[in-house]
Length: 188
Image (cartoon, rainbow, N blue to C red; front, side, top):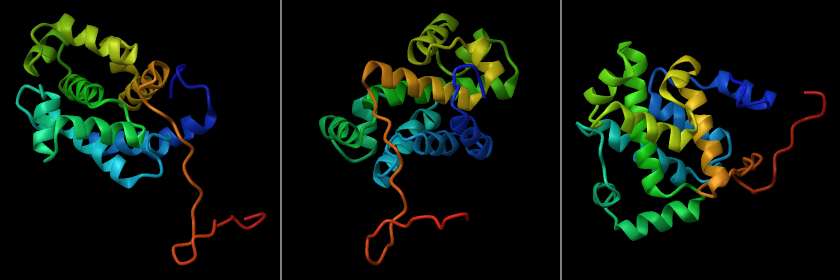
């Protein structure tokens, strides 16, 4: 996957997720499998909805107030839901969703960074490049080479560093009827 990730398990995981068909779902699934809101389907759905909002807006800009309104909740409640689920703050998710939109356009179109950023609503290419670097630690030219999941991993690691997100190990499977943990059979 990249020099950013040295864990062979994460590299193997990245190979199982295909973000090309539906990039937002692919990125949300990758983040879930990495342990972001791993045990909470509602949190994964919330993450996916917040990442999708900038994709649907013409210029990609969605305020937290607007996102809360579109999700039929208040700004404060939305922030609490994200915090309770171990997700980054809504403004971080929306900003990453906007970067994701431009990044996808950049990869698909083959345009230069200045043309792709202005076409997706950024006031200038420096705003896009600086925002992407602030959120992920990666510049657009490097991200274009590395790919979408590299960008998602970089964002996740940056959010964990600044304390905006928690990575939790996914809960082992449990029996739906009795709730006991399902253990794999030895040798199988």
